[in-house]
Length: 173
Image (cartoon, rainbow, N blue to C red; front, side, top):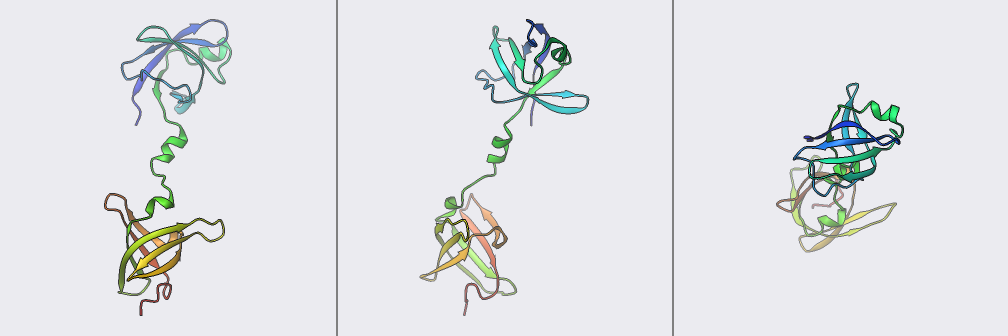
């Protein structure tokens, strides 16, 4: 969720530069790789800073990619902006590596079977053609394909993973 971080006040210089008023929500350590978001014609538009220079605690000058002339920059005057996140950063919130699951307690059952087994995920074998999880169940090592379709639920807080596997894969007999 974004909150208002400032307003674009007026033109500055001759190369599409603008003067910004910064609100208290504007971060001290602003990274120009992070876009500012403005609503233009009802659409949320990311504004990437090509140049950003602070002017005191509540002011700054900036130039934005794609707004490199005074005429184009004039379209931004008066707009309020918010701080956005990189798309990659937003995706990273939910991203994890399969290796991170090593050591998780495993509960596994086969489709159509009431039988459940418990064990530990002991290893992950990374392969483009056939990535595998190694499970230790009842003292024996079992390899299963590391595919999304078999993972029913992952509880990161309790370090547990629940698999639903095709019939016969675990040989529960």
